[in-house]
Image (cartoon, rainbow over all chains, first blue to last red; front, side):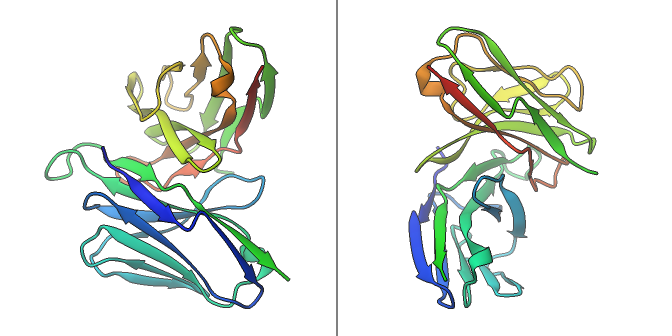
Length: 117
Length: 112
């Protein structure tokens, strides 16, 4: 079945350092989504990438979708204490050609980010 | 305010005692699903529903049941809970074809 692997599982950084989490799928994806879950909270949608090689930015966050649409990354520049939480990728794949059926969204294991002040 | 609500938020129960976790959304979303979150395993889908009276198994459906009699509600039923179902459960909804998931606040379930 479809698998989405995410690394690292944990990342501890000093405030101001950069952070990157990587997501790899065993199959080609239709799109990939990223979510953030604050400690004690629920996952919140950040962004969706659809096109091969797509790069999107949200302030200090940079999201990339690989050329083969099988991997993705989230990079945070100059982390702040407000960035703490778990970051999940979620890969979307349609079971049938043409995308007429509802897609299956598979989440990665998540990367837990700790930022030390 | 657009939201997904879950009840209860916390539940401690004993093995074998049937329980239901409710989920409701006010966004008229067609798609709803249940996930469980366990350390190191991320979010795993239990069941999902594409619309009223249409449900299907996710990746870890064993020991769970769902129903979708109304568009806004998608309860999760544990007929005979076991300790391995101790977990954090999230309900989520999305619009048909959009796939951006709106998550509820979560239900922390402990089965002793």
